[in-house]
Image (cartoon, rainbow, N blue to C red; front, side, top):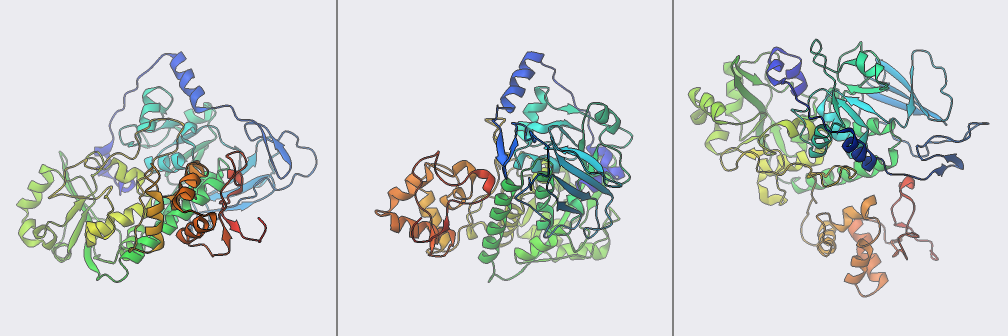
Length: 526
């Protein structure tokens, strides 16, 4: 909706001038230094790379430099093929073919191949420009926040870390008032090789089409984290994230599998000095269609997306809804307008106090537009809480706010930004099944650890791969065998799986690059 609004007459309402706070160069250099810690070189398949990931010797035939590979499973608007020293990435596709752009992402220190019609980009990319706020969340999730150098506007950015980087002068504004997008000519002259954008083709260098909004499923949208990771060689990191998302979504669906379906609408209204308008759903297939279905909701459709007024037939659709997901800010002006139209007495959702706006984070819809795409599990949990009641999963809703009982901004922002180097703090929380289930076992173990994540999630999280997780887990049960049984049961792994206690941080488990967990098949002598 946000992008649709920006490309329409009403989009003019959302564009505001952004100021910039200039600081001394010494402060900027200090902060940039903090974001770029020194890293020693390493090896991939026997090939030596320097601290920047560049091949030190390009002689002879090099082996596969990308041992971990990610392909779109649900997404249809991009594609990739892997080769020993480069990746061929297609963007702006239809069913993964008929693509608007082709790029050759070649490892630095190697020679790019010559492919007709393809643009060569050296990877890992060091600096990117971003034209749309949802892309920022993907970059933060893969640990590439420090690479963001230019955006179109700071007004709609909900990430505290990115806002801090902007006000420190580390992120600049690149805005073309004629196109409401990035200023590509200036970016190219400044050395940018990648500018993620949703602009329609044809686009000019260094633009790279990032069209998660064209995907028709929530998982297809989420898989754009794979797309972003291609440019930074972060395939391993995102595999773990995607796996966790899918596990939580499956768990949430299990919670409501036997619940009756609830009639719901997904519709917004707004007013301004230019007049009032309605923001309507486009119909299925779309990301909200599969999410409402997973949440056991009957999504009422039949709206004319191309008009911003409501017909008598469309009003009747809304009146039938048990729950109204209101896709805009709900304020006194909106409430007064709808009351004047007679909505309270005619609308079942209004009579039952079941209208949920999307402004629970900081009282605006900025985080709704910026963060929900990359976190479909959280949006699903929000929908389930609104549709079936908050007691079903004890999930504290993130974006959806009951306009009758909750204040705007009653949810915390997605990041407190205590450290610019740290990854984005996610909105997700543990999906809790019935007592005695695997999730309740995980909860029992996780309660002993002073962290918001449970042990189950920690075992798949690089930042908690070692102590104190294992020390706490093994202090809970008297024997290693019992501890191993509890851990494997909690993770849903076969009983033949071994989750042995590591002897030290230095020697425990595989490196993060391997993409493996500490749990490996038991061979009788490990």
